[in-house]
Image (cartoon, rainbow, N blue to C red; front, side):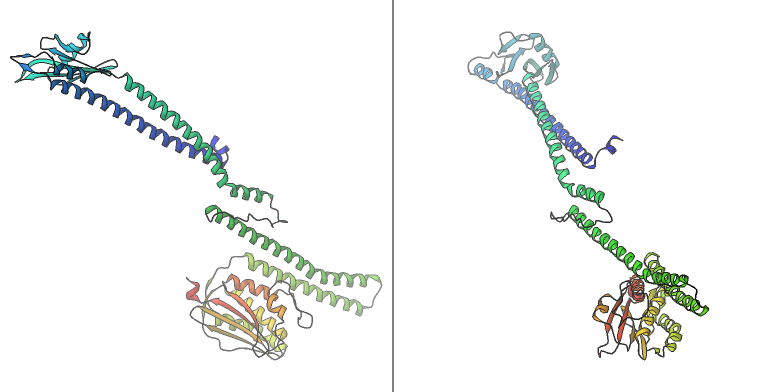
Length: 460
C-alpha cells in the first residue's frame, strides 16, 4: 500500500536499488566464501605438506626412530616457523624433537592417539593439529604432529568481510543516487507530458513537446503525443468552424422570419398580404428544416457505426438514379446510367446510396441538358463517376466544395445548404474511399468521382 503512494520514478528507483543490492549481496557472499575456502584450503595444505616433509627426513633404524641431528635437524627447523610448529613423538608418547622448548604435550598426545589409524586432524579452539603416524611394515614407531593458529586467517576473513560490506554499501548508495538521477531524466518527457496535459484546455492546444532527443521508446511516445495534440487541435478547430458556419446559416432564415412577423404585426393588412407573408415564412421554415436534416445527417454519418455488408455498386447506382429521375424530368435534364458494370463492394447500402443521390442532386442543379452516372471497376477499386454539362467547378470549388457550408460565388452557386458534398465525402471516407472533384477535359461540365475498394481488396 505504501508503494502505491510513491511516485513512479521513486518506485522505479527503489526497485532498481533493490536489484543492485541483491546482486551486490550475492556477489559479496560468493566472494567471501571463495576467500574462506581458499584460506582454509591453503591452511590445511600447508599443514599436510609440513608433516609429509618432516616424514621424509625421519629415519627408522634397528627398530627405533633415529634422533635428528646435523643437516636433518637444520632442515626440520627450516620447515617450521612463521606461526607453524611441529613435533615428533616416539611410539611410547615421549617427545623426540620439536621447534618449541615447551610444546603442548597433552594436545600432541591426543593428536597422536587420533592418528593411530592414519593421518588425522584435531581442532583445539583456534588451533588445528595434523598428525601423521610413522609406520614401517605395519609397525608403529611414532607420530609427526604439525599445528598452527587460525587467528591470522580469521583476521583476514574479517577484513575481507568488512571490505566487501563497505564496498557493497558504497555501491548500493551510488546505485540509488545514480538510479534516481537517471530515472528522473529518462522520465522527464513523461513528466512534461503530464504537466502539459494538466494545463491544456480546449481553447489552447498549441503547445507541443517538440522532442529533440534520441529515437527511443520515450521519443516515439513524445512524437505520438504531439501528433495526438495535432489531431485534437484540428478536431476542435473543425468543431469551432462547424458551429460558426451552422450559426451563420441558421441566422439568415431566422432573421427573415423575424422580420416578416414584425412587419405583419406592425399594422393591419389584407388577407392577401397575410397569405403572402405566411408563404414567405413557409419557405424559410422549409429551408430551416432542410438545413436541420442535413446537419443531422452529417453528424450521424460521422458518429454512428456503419455495419458493412457485401453489395453491388451498379445496383446502388441504378437505384439512386431511379430515385432522382422525377427531379431530373422536372428540370428538363436527361439523367442516365452509362457503362455501369457489376462490381462488388463492402458497403452500408443506405448511406452510400444517399451519397450518390447527393452527387446527382448537386449535378442536376448546374447541368444544362444531361447528367451521366458511370460505374467502372478494376481488380482493386470501384469508381462511381457523376458528370454534368454545366459550367464546371471554379478553382475555389475544386479545393473546398466538399467542406461544410462552403458555397461558391452567387453566379456559380445555386440554392442549397452547402452540406451535400460534405455529407457525401463523410460517407465515402467511412467506406475507406475517396472523393475527387475535377472539370471535364474539354471544359464542358464537372465530374465527381467516388473511388472505393473492390470487395476482394476490402476484405483483406
